[in-house]
Every structure is written in C-alpha cells, then in structure tokens.
Amino acid sequence: MSNKIALFQGSFDPFTRGHESIVQRALTIFDQVVVLVVHNSLKHGFFDVDTRVKIIEDTFRNEPRVRVMASDGLTIDVARQVGACCFIRGVRTVQDYEYEMGIAEVNLKFSGIETMLLYTRPELSHISSTIVREWLKYGKDMTGYLPQGLSKPMLTHLLTRHQ
Image (cartoon, rainbow, N blue to C red; front, side, top):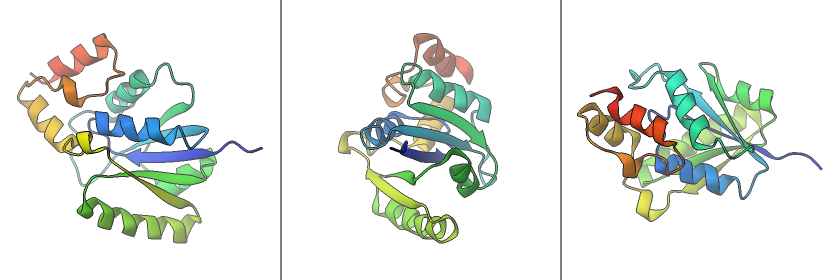
C-alpha cells in the first residue's frame, strides 16, 4: 500500500485560517500533506520565507502528517521529489477557480499529476493573505484570521513584528 502524498503550495504570506482549513481537510483524504512555501518573484514578501515556514510548522506542530518545505523552483519538481500524487489548491471565488484551472492544466501536462480543488468554507471565504498583511502592517489584531493552531509565543511574535 502506497503513501498518498498531496502537495499544497503557495506564498502563504501569511498563512491564514483558510489555509489551515484546507490542510486539515486534505488530511482526511491523503496520508500526508506537504505544504510548500514558494517565493513569488512578482510579490515583495511581508514575512520572509523562513518566518512563513516557521508559522506553518508551529501551526501543525502536533500533526506528524504535515511536512513544510520552501522552494524557489518549479512546484512540479518538488512534487516529484516528495512523491506527491496530487496538488491541492484552495478556491474562494470564481476568479480563483479560473486561475487555478489554468495552473492545474499546465501542471497535469508537464507532470502528469492531478490537481484537487477544495472550496473554502463559507465562514472563511472572506479571509485573504492580502487583507491580513495589510491590517498587520498597521498593527491591527488579526488573531481571528490567523491559524487557531498557532502557539501563543508565535502569535505574539506575529502580532507585534511589524508595529
């Protein structure tokens, strides 16, 4: 019996409750989820990649089936490296769906790996990293938008980092 591994990639700047929900739901389908933090050359990161990795590791510190990595290479290369059978993507809006459909088609063509879209839970669909970043930038408490699994020290660090 093979270990079914899914790869969930994104810039995760920062990782939100919406992202956390997608990983938790993917764990009900797959044996392991690899969360891949990628550097998006089109975006100037609010948190550096190492901090983003630490946030996700802290969020899932009690879940051994979640592995966190960082890369600035092609996602399909990392997927092959970790033995992923599927890409996981979260979808909040119709615009997200259209964007993700194009990426899924390219990934399938070049890697042979399917993509599974998981729709964001309605109560989390308004949460975006862009909104959280903007509010954190101005020192606002975004506790309700950040992962519930974050430890108190990490949460305090995030909420005070850019004030």
